[in-house]
Amino acid sequence: MAVIYQTYRQPDAEVLAYVVDDPGEAHLWVYLSRSRGQAHGDSCWYVTREWGKASTRVYFSSRGRADLLVYYVGDRGQARWNRPHKLHGQL
Image (cartoon, rainbow, N blue to C red; front, side, top):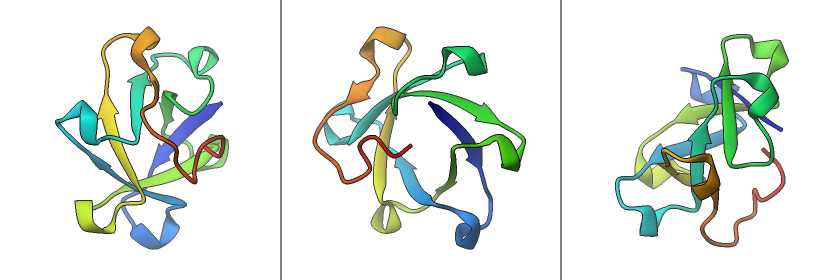
């Protein structure tokens, strides 16, 4: 389950991410869920404001520093890994 906490301090992050406009460039297509219960796998994220309840802490960095390129999708059925990645199964 991908329960994401967005940190504003890079040293606190487990993953550095960058949001791309082109879906073909992204490693992961992400759907943002409105409820924690709907978050599942790596690609359906629920963003929490509570550090201790997160499965992963993400810092949105510059593209050059990013571990993960993310593209947001509007439909849950589109959310998926777009290409193999070392973080697969770890968010």
